[in-house]
Length: 174
Image 1 (cartoon, one colour):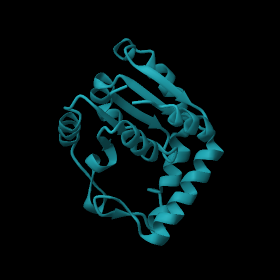
Image 2 (cartoon, one colour):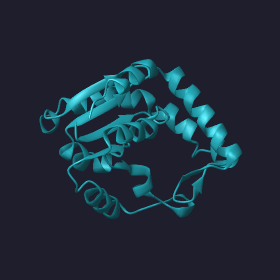
Image 3 (tube, one colour):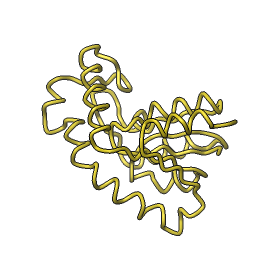
């Protein structure tokens, strides 16, 4: 494993796991949200996002986290491994609600100066609402996507619980 893509529904812990993998394997970590969002939650143009991802993944080793279908062909085309965090909805929601609450209260930066707020949390742009809307779709789409001919080269690590993830990470060797 030298080029790893960590995927899963919003709030599953992709960034946290990708950071841990990067530390353990001493390889660069690429966070797709940082490439996608400008300050004030402004999304970059599609061509800019694709160019940023292409540049970020130009090296021989990396771990990337995120679910952006816009760049999946780039990420998965270059990856050798996909780690899929496929947790039950209640686990994801528990993690996401806690994380969101913590970020709002502490005003922790999410990326590029962006922060979560109570207003955004309870709006149509809510990260919690987004997770609820996309959870089942992601669980259905990944098995289909991973069977496509262009992705058969990928080793798939399918993790179904935080404990399974902790166990897998403990056994991860350089």
